[in-house]
Image 1 (spheres, rainbow over the protein chains, first blue to last red):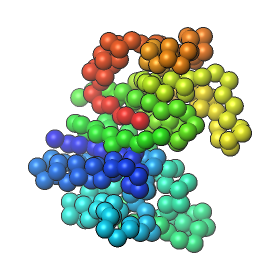
Image 2: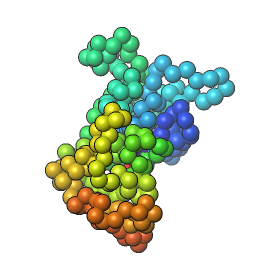
Image 3: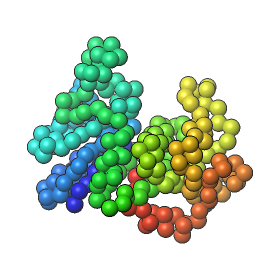
Length: 132
Length: 120
């Protein structure tokens, strides 16, 4: 089965982002394919390289990065959600003249078209929802 | 193979969080790629449809104005949870032109009748 994941849940509040990472791990472990994980809205926090988790608590950024490294998983942060939250890669940091790049290298920044494309190509799309 | 049908479900009020706006952004992006999704407003999501929204005081754009631009992108029909409308004391007169109130059975049919569901 070919999956696409949409992660709206913040990695810093609740369990949605962690559940998404666990789902991805389980699906890949059973031989399924994950075309793309698209992070939107508060979900983009998963790519924040500068986040520091308290000792004894899960480190969601490291978990996603580790998953991507082991399975060659494509992790995409929605560009507009990312920029307004201070999540910048080298290109965006240069474009907007900010001093730091803050996106973990396991993630890339991309437009919503990548969600549209992944949705069109996947057998299943699973949303890990946000809360207001 | 034809493109899979997509139902986008939006369940949150317009200004308390950015989630409702993100749902519309996703819908507009899909429409811009010639894959307009079906939109379903559930629960507090029906508050997004209120007329006369003035968001200037909170430094953001009117959600209703974004909604009103949807027909330009080929999204003409907005399915709206009729029970939630009644719960918020809203009537059809408050809603945008393309809004169509639906009961629970019709909501079930929408959920069952699409290939993919994106839940905001």
